[in-house]
Image 1 (cartoon, protein in one colour):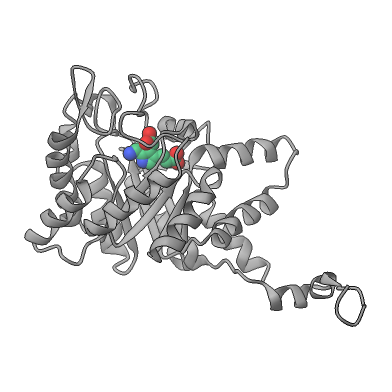
Image 2 (cartoon, rainbow, N blue to C red):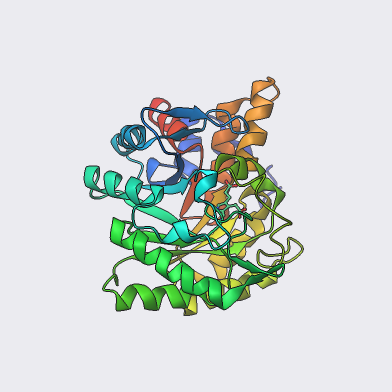
Length: 331
Ligand code: PBG
């Protein structure tokens, strides 16, 4: 009851479509999305990924075409990941430094076609190592500082190819500062760093590892460098370090099970803050939708809005293209 002794009717502001639109606290637009894409060698190939229905690996000719569709719909950013053939995977991940590797060739082609598109490149060694880890491995240990030297060089080849935002996803200590220094001293002071600041050791990455072909390669797990999912406050320290070291944007990964972390980081640092709705989250929703247990479009939009509510400025999501189309058709 209110002061007049009349019932408080919260439902007045929910009674029709227009009033709900008028009082909506958050909105989604195409400008909220970063679209992760997988590239592979060959010509004219669009190869479905079994564990991620609706997601494909594209050869370079086809990636340019599919990116064009995203650009035309107003998606501002893509994130590229390579499917490296097994013969190019070595213990030192040397292919990561090849200026002509698949990622760098893809970046060059896409940059030439779409000068204003934000092209994010993942900085980590896992697509290139025969052991599937993000860093160099010696006697069962992932080496921190030695890995960083390689990551800096990897980021430089990406910047040289036309990448405007490097995204270190490796979780080595001190890599943001080292990459920032490397970029600046090579004249790439305008290249941004999106830090995977709070990246958890997560089983939700399963389908992605299929997508880049590192599932069978991976020996052991990534718990000595990715975060322990028991910890929330530790994410504040990770993000603070990345910001001090020069990150332009911070990211939380996975997404939906970690919205508490998103909110905490956004409230604490007021940085441009992103989340990655990862492969396993996508695949869970798609599997349920295929069984008729969930309405795909509805869970897609509801899950994406949850990121905005938690404080995200944008979302890396495999739904980027579909969600944008949905928004266009339903506005
Ligand atoms: C690896 C990397 C991973 C993802 C993005 N970059 C997997 C991992 O850390 O094993 C996962 C993305 C997803 O699951 O969609 N550097």
